[in-house]
Length: 290
Image 1 (cartoon, helix red, strand yellow):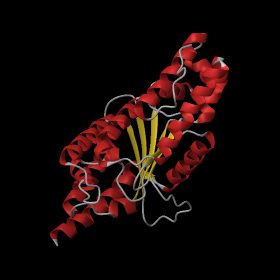
Image 2 (image 1 turned 90 degrees about the vertical axis):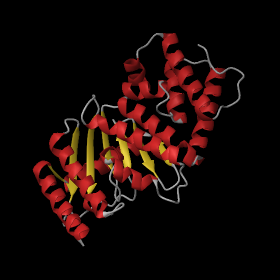
Image 3 (image 1 turned 60 degrees about the vertical axis):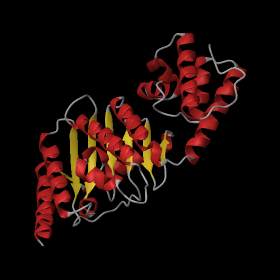
Image 4 (image 1 turned 135 degrees about the vertical axis):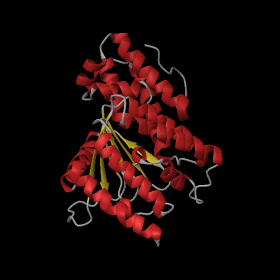
């Protein structure tokens, strides 16, 4: 096996790439498939693939399990565990700065392409993959973010690229949109009319999307405090005002999968979802007329 011998714990993309490469080479060294490796380590094959492609940062426990399966020598195992711990600490502390926004969205595009099913919810914002260009621009032009014009344009393009996955490609999207997010006016009533009409088109025309709308009249029994994306059952991405975290622990993922299932129970789909969307769009049109 080729490992990070006599190399201090790495940081940033180079460290992540080194960890991914070392785990990939260790698996190949003993001649087992990703499917078999996943079965023996208690992970899915898709998670193994994402780790080896540096799309997911594994936990220290994940790395320990894989080292055991791959029969990694003790000294190299210790270095990989140290590297994983260092990278996890960096990830937990890192803030996504303005200059890195477009790079983050490009990574999201690659992660999306490597996932079979993505489940998405956000309590106060239209989910990124559903956003129109005008709506996205309103978000990225928030004066608090101090994002350059170049970064804003690159981020908008990256998000629009991911949006194409609703109509083509192999990834399936399941999205839950609460009425409160549709009522959180971005930009102007005209922007919201265009946005809501576009979601209605996705509901009826996008082959890779299932969109549910939770009307405000429906009593809720769950109260998510933040948005999240579930990638297969391999990882959950959650965001705060200053950072984004990727959760890969089995218990964490199970919690969010269960939460999403409860949100689906509250939502209306298909024609019923379109009725809600048309009702809300009509009220924005009236607001625009003043």
